[in-house]
Length: 384
Image 1 (cartoon, one colour):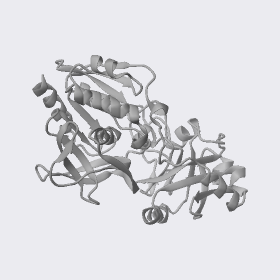
Image 2 (tube, one colour):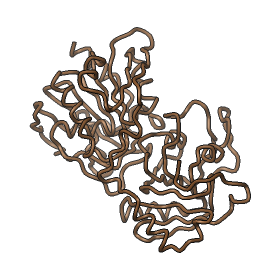
Image 3 (cartoon, rainbow, N blue to C red):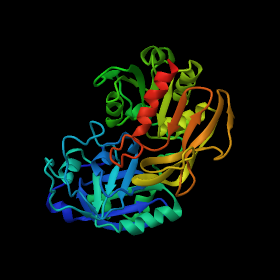
Image 4 (cartoon, rainbow, N blue to C red):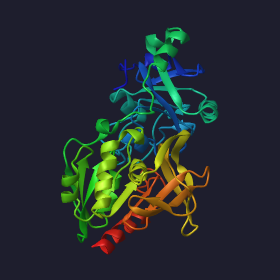
């Protein structure tokens, strides 16, 4: 629940709302969905579709999402596209919300769902100008203020924004991980059983793995290495998730245990950063991150370019050319983002492990990277 949130009314829907960035920049708009205060890191997402998956992605924990597409909410909310059982964003910024949804699967409007989950939003903001500002100045803390809070002085609102915890150093894994293990059973012919470490996993990911004949045991991030290896007899998957990868030491130890045991490992997004750290590489915060469903990534082995879905504000620091000596043998960068040369994939050459920074489960997003799940299954079968 966003701090200070309270249910909105139709009369309040057109009331003033204020957006304040930690560098003092102010944008004014109108309140939307829930009236109150939202505080978090300001990030922008470039997808023209997929807002339901974005809102329910645990990787957005602690972040206020700015949608760069001008019209949001056109297809409403359905019962199929949630990536978890709740919305995780701290707040939501749009230019023009849909007046009425239109889609055969829609059950209700986006505004109704935001209000039901008490997510504070703001509309009628110049999101193009806001996005350009974040690109120039970098991701920063931000607040949305509506209702009584919107009438306070900007100076007092700025104090609130600057008192919000930074994403740097934030350990958010325990906020989003499952509390109990659960099984997503294999579909069709069973080809193996794996452990999936839930660092903020999206529901489509274990589904994609189960579609390939894998029993997927989704485990809490606090699981012991012994239980992880016992459960994941054929391989271990490390999921996406929020927070600063430099703070997740226990997960790094889990991944190192899997590498030592020579269990096949596949990591995506936060899991990719964990593999990087397990190999002795450093991570760093990007200026404004990659978030959206239109990011070009090149496979350095084949030269093939895939259009991929991203959601990350941190990255792995590694040389793009040549082999990397690690405590687990040789490794190399396998993928790179063509927009800015950020490392988008790692591959170990002496132990069965690889990772990508993007989201091959395509929820929401293109399906170009879907074969990576097949590569994981192939790696499991070759490692037996």
